[in-house]
Length: 127
View 1 (cartoon, helix red, strand yellow):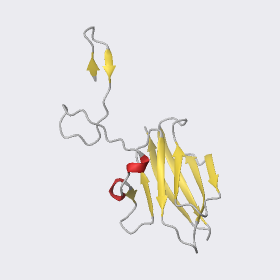
View 2: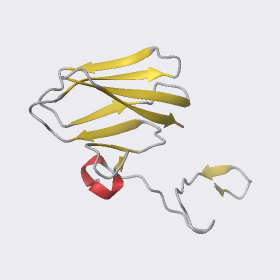
View 3: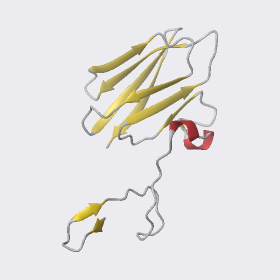
């Protein structure tokens, strides 16, 4: 935090993985500037990657296109299993951005449904 002469907070800095407390940098990137190393995967051979986790406003998802098994829909569920958002008609896409700003802090499940009936679930933390 930075303070003015009267002691009021005037600026807040978020520093992810900072080495010192005096650094004042942020680790927020524009979607267009993301590289493969910025995206998280379940394991190195996985076809799904996502950024950031924990999320504040938007979650960026990316997956590899496979003509025989496409992502058909994505659901955002709360921890109780209630569907908060559903996105469909994704067969020709390889990326999707999901808005998390309207949701309260907590744990969410992002479920990717494939055309062959399989599902992949990602645990996302909303700050």
